[in-house]
Image 1 (tube, rainbow, N blue to C red):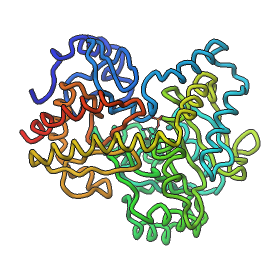
Image 2 (image 1 turned 45 degrees about the vertical axis):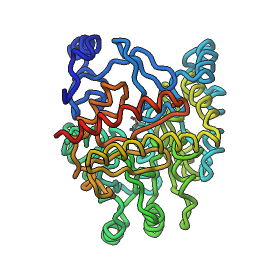
Image 3 (image 1 turned 135 degrees about the horizontal axis):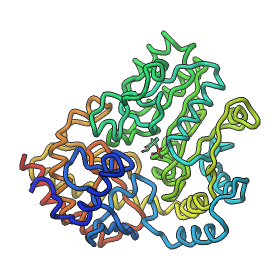
Image 4 (image 1 turned 90 degrees about the vertical axis):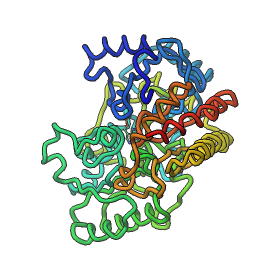
Length: 439
Ligand code: PMP
């Protein structure tokens, strides 16, 4: 069958039916709903190392890694121990506590340009707060973002957004009044000339440019050589801030993130960075940060308000710290080797069946576009055979491999992906390539 049906996953189908009564669409984040690929989303009951086990007891190699966070694999013993120890001491204090300091110190130590971070609970909060801070610091309103980049469901940033907005082919989100995006300028990714023209026309109104350090939410589209440096140069000339969103790439593309791979930039580091995913180790923890001078504009020292009941939660920060401790220098070559093996096998299988495809990379993050030309921006990302991806996805799922349920998402591996897991992926690919070819 082109799509796996509820008969492949009766327990998941039953849970989905119950979920759909009490949760819109049956899911708490739209990308989980299999809308683009069809079929029944698997309700996961348990996860260990590189494996997901669904409610029917079927095991899948996990190439989703919770959309990025699970870089050490699921339920890593060191992280589990840290969580147990922290939880035994209480779940949330509403006062400052040591774990927040330890996690902030670890992040600042890893990411060279950072002097301070403020901890929050989601990537969305991190980018929302960074945008507010940039507006507060500059006294300007306009934000520039790039089509296909996703920065969480922040009103002002839900314009031509990637991830689930791309998957569902939504023009934009309803419920975002025009005033909320009136100060948002959306530009094509990797296009320096358009950026320069925009700044030439409106530079004095622009508070910040926000960009994914390397785009991962329209599939993986790395910045063209010099693109991020051009953002730095142009923003600096016009007195705007540069916000590098490393929610996905942070601690994933290198021990620090994308900037650790690509930087330093000739014109200096981005003014603000945002993080999430890996730094929470699978718990709700995220951050935004910059120099002490910029961060001093935040309450309580400055006038830009930002807060959170659960910010710096002691259990989440313990999980994040234990995860970052496990992100040793030798992890990254291993992630890349695992990812290469899988990507090369996917490419060989698709080539053997004559299926047009292109693999693109940012560190160990990669994605397979079902088109033969490289992808440099959102228009090109959308110009691919998403129905072929759907057939490919479902064949892999039947063979016990859980890919992202959309052609617009990155594939992730973890340090726990061992030979057994990688072999199961490689063995599944020829049949999936045949399914993709069978359109
Ligand atoms: N920015 C980027 C680059 C992301 O990839 C994401 C999530 N995929 C977010 C922000 C939002 O993070 P969260 O889902 O934790 O709100």
